[in-house]
Length: 85
Image 1 (cartoon, rainbow, N blue to C red):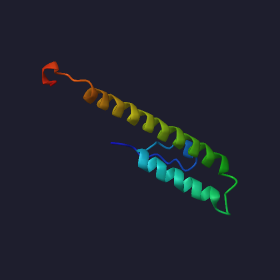
Image 2 (tube, rainbow, N blue to C red):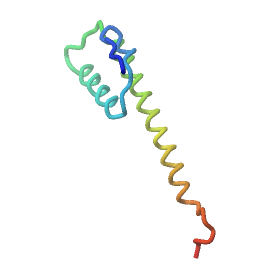
Image 3 (cartoon, rainbow, N blue to C red):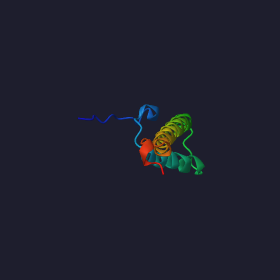
Image 4 (cartoon, helix red, strand yellow):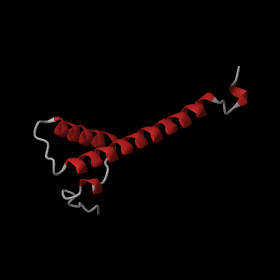
């Protein structure tokens, strides 16, 4: 049902995957930028995509942190006063 789009012309429009997939793409971009043969014609779009991936990963980390805090807070507060000794 999901349609695959050709995002080779504008990588900034590519959808984001999960955290691990986004990190792998970010590492790939970084490796390309660190190489001696950086394509100057795509440099700006690669840096833009890297920026988007960083923001996406940070958002995923914040959401996970909030979720974990909520779960842990539920375990920190006793729900049954009768269970306390």
